Amino acid sequence: MKAKTALIISSLIMIAGIALTVVYTMDVFTYIIIALGVAFIIPSFVNMLMSTTSDANAPEGKKVKIQRFSGLISSVGSVIFGITMIGWSDLYVPFLPMIFAIILILGGCFHLCAMGLAFRPHRLPLWLYIMPLVLLALGFSIIYVNKDVLTPQYIVLMSGIGFIIFALNALVELWFIYKFNRVPVKATPVDDVIEVEAVEEI
Image (cartoon, rainbow, N blue to C red):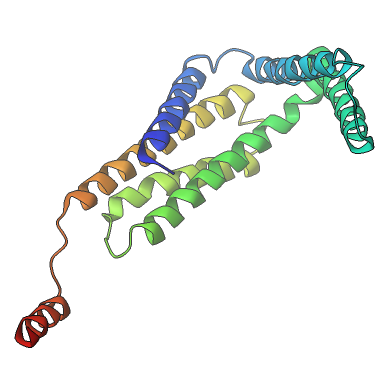
C-alpha cells in the first residue's frame, strides 16, 4: 500500500473513531444498522434500474442474459435485506458488538505483524507495541465481558477509542518508514572489493 493511500485511510479511521467517541451516548447501533440498510438499497436499486432499462434491441448472448438475470435477482435480494435492516434494526443490533470486537482484534494482529515483520532489519521501540496490544485487549473485552456491565454505549466508546489507536499506530508506522527511507545505504565491503578488482583488470 502506498504511503499516501495509507495516510488517507488512517485519517478516515481517525475521523470515524472520533465520531464514535463523541456520539457514544446515542443509540449508535441502530443508526449504524439503518445506514447499512440504506447502503444496501441505493446501489441495488440503481443496478435494478440499469438492468431493466437497458436497450432491448441490443443483441445479447446467453451468457449476458444469465448475468443480467442473476444481477437482477441479487439486487432484489439486497433491497429486501436493506429494507429489513431499516424496518427491523433491532434484529441486527446484537451482532454489531461482535463485529466491532473482530475489527479491533484484526487491527491489533495486523499492526503486530507489520511491526514485527515488515520493518526488518530495523527494530522499532518496544513502547510502540503497546497500541496493538490495547486493540487486542479492547476486542477481547467486548467479546467476553458481561453485557450487563458492558452496555452498548461503552462498546461504542471502546470501539471509537480503538479506531483512534489504530489510526495513531498507522501514522507512527508511516513516520518510521519515512525515517528509515531517509537513512543512506552504506556500501558493503563486498562492493568495495568488486570495484577494486574491476579497476585492477582495467
